[in-house]
Image 1 (cartoon, helix red, strand yellow):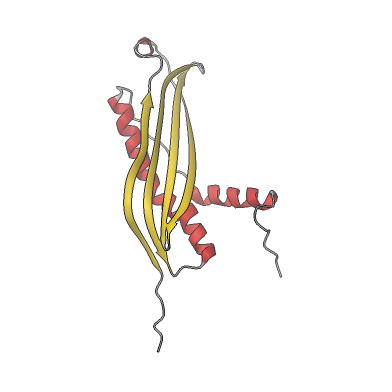
Image 2 (image 1 turned 45 degrees about the horizontal axis):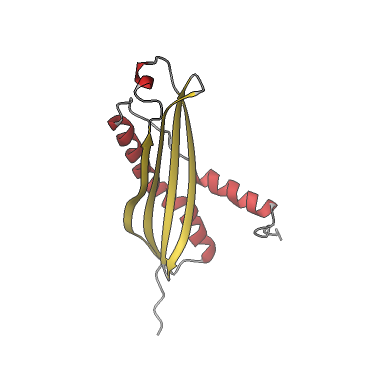
Length: 155
């Protein structure tokens, strides 16, 4: 008798791969007044390490500018994780790597960015949650439009 293989999804390790804070206009920027314009960019990447093990990166870059020209700070983190995925269909593996894993990693990235900004003597950085489901759907649509992956046919 063969035993049915159970799906496995587990976090093996979470870690900061890269973390930086740049304050190019210090110390003068601390004397300037005004409400900063904050821009946040998020990207994800995943790679297979070996059978059943994947590395997923979430890179978040935050730039704050005064008067749309003077950079207050540039803050970036790459939060990473090693995940174990076994006995899962390939299309579900891609969904887990593109949505579930980034959803796990993002709160750690947000905390690291906030901590570093506060250490740089700026006000706390309260970043909004990211909809990784929508980002994944946009990436799939982009890849289908460019022919990188076939468009599923409806029957």
